[in-house]
Image 1: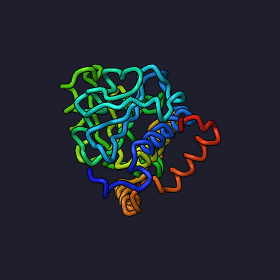
Image 2: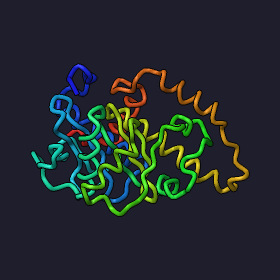
Image 3: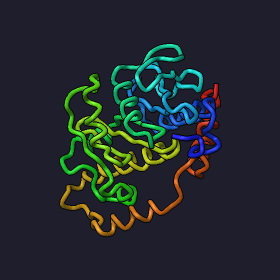
Length: 251
């Protein structure tokens, strides 16, 4: 990953730290927080073999730019206080090492995305949020906790050349070419999962699904839009929200 591919706001380590901390805080504000578990990770634009990730003792709402740990893709800790859980290192370092096109990886388990991950039919074309991902989601069967490096290949296989995977009976994995892209994709995926769980209360036979051809057309419409970078209006809206809640994430 060369510097020429990086948005201006993401070219320094400190800016990457600030933006990743903002993503953690933004998800916490949205109610995405599984105690101290789950991680968001981002590689450095000017040092693509190095990755930032939160320590295992912090919840999302506690993360700051300076509290993020720095690791190499091979798992060597370079800086920071504390450590990362084994699962966090296996998942995020493994995916970022195998996918040089991605800057960020988000892994979460919320009640909604866990519920969808346990449904045989996966994410349905029930709303305009869901059709963004039509036939663009990989599925990874649960084979135990991701404590072993041998499990990394399964995650990469599920992602394929895409950026979204639903981990069966577990949660979701979202990749992004920027932190902003990963955040916004995760937002729409999480919203689609929440909507699906609520809609299923009416019974599957009573739901109106969007036809495959319309869903594909809609997904292509989204793909023709400009790439999501840190200049995107939704990302700036997030930064304002996080800043209004507490500016200490920048510390």
